[in-house]
Amino acid sequence: MMENVYKPDLMEVIEVKQHTVDVKSVKIKFRDPERAARFSYEVGQFGMFSLFGMGESTFNICSSSNWKDHIEFCFRKTGRVTEAFWQIDEGDTIGFRGPYGNSYPMEEWEGKNLIFIGGGIAMPPIRCAVWYALESREKYGNITVVYGARTTKDLVFEDELDQWAEYKDVRVIRCVDPGGETPEWTYEVGLVPNVLRDAQIPADNTVALVIGPPIMIKFTLPVLDQMGIAPASIYSSLENRMKCGVGKCGRCNCGPVYVCKEGPIFSFEQLSKLPSDF
Amino acid sequence: MSEIISREALLRAVDEWLKQGVPVLGPSRINDAFVAYAPLASSDALALDGYIHPRNSIKEAVFPKHEKIYAYHIKGSGVELEDPERSVAKQIVLAARPCDAAALPILDHVFNWDFKDAFYNARRAATTVVTLACTEHDAQCFCTSVGLGPAAENGSDAMLLPLGDGTFEVRCFTDKGRELFAGKTESSGQAAKVPAGPPERLDVGPITEFLKDSFDNPIWNELTLRCLGCGACAYECPTCHCFDIVDEGNAAGGYRAKNWDSCQFEMFTMHASGHNPRARQAQRQRQRVMHKFSIYPQKFGEVLCTGCGNCTRNCPVSLGILNTLMDLAAHLDTTGAK
Image (cartoon, rainbow over all chains, first blue to last red; front, top):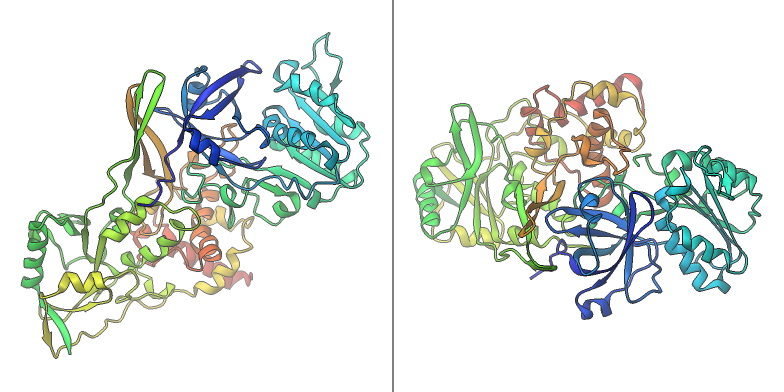
């Protein structure tokens, strides 16, 4: 009998953390220890997370692949499934299928300076790569994180930004959109592309990972170009809607490329050759 | 020498299969204007002539509209998952059009690349497909334009070819087909003439070339302005296979299912953020045409279309693949676009 690829593994919720008024992250582990022992993944991959009776959603696995005892995902309360996820608590059971898709070329990035650029809810798929790089700190050059949100209340994994800044040769730049600041805010005020431009980050031998709303990406790419980073060295993660995650259900494609199988991680050189169906 | 079966013997065989408990799906006259593939209650329900193509396709036999993929039972904070009954009973698809049968080997690719779909494969293995060669065609038929024809063998385990006198020549192509007709046919000197199919209506080659680089071409807006987005084309298509995954149940238990879906619907690609890469109907029509004539061929080496014409027959505004391709061909002729 062939394996049922649509049937998830049962996961125990071990911790739920609220980040903003509508964003939470969840730590889960396999109920079946044998399955846990066989499981491995690479940073950048995604999974299908489900609540039984409510449905399935696609999220990046936002924990580092070096963390063997659990995985994490992060979501914004925005629809039927995520409204239901908002209610879960420690000890609850959820479903997980995965890992699916390709991953960040972390080995290829070794020896290079890394710039991570994220907007809003895009921090989780960046966070897994940041931790992964920090856990092999000697393999990578300077690491810069530029993270922006609409307001001071919309930053996700904000406490970890401070932890990252303590590592050697790591610079963390956080910003909020103009008008999103409070009197206590001591960091940058401005849109991500402008803050990036003004930060004067050295860009030789550099790889950039840019994830965020389409409008942020659109205006960030020209800045990276001015900094001299080639499209082949700029990466992103596509967020096309998925149902199956395994190349069957037919909706996540950009031309002949199925994002769930050949993505979700692409360089902008690769993306420039695909129809803009994302 | 050939093997033949009389109409009466064929109908007797149908009743025999049904009596053995083997379901038979075949063309059935639902009402005066409507023939559709449906489970036959007896051989009386089988419609062997008087229509060009049933209103639906046979894909339901291997890819049901609604299929349970597992059940869940919630007990306290625990959940138990249960595989659905996976031992699929043998079934027969009888008198399928060759264009419908030809869809099956095409669909095998997508349901088996890398990850394998156990549900599709189990049904496919349990299904014996007997086609009925076409003696007539209508203006929507274009099998000959996609490399098939009125007696194309792709996907058939056996084929019935009308001899014109109420008997059929039986050609068996696989063990499943031979097993099904063992002892039911008689030898004869008669051999069916393979009927002429519809004329070749267009050359798919240049259109496929054009599609590779036409993503931003304004032609899509013009061609598909009248599309209502109803999805009938996809549902009655033998090769359209996109599906949704939904939960049916409540806090105590229920099941998760695959449901047919269609790229013609706005929600199909809507992101959680509200952003939609295919927000307009023209983009969704472009996807359907490209999936069939550019994406699938690039991925799996075959066009995702068998020329059955069902999309046009079922389209409330006379779009469908054939009309769209002919409009594209005319556009290529007049503009000389590559």
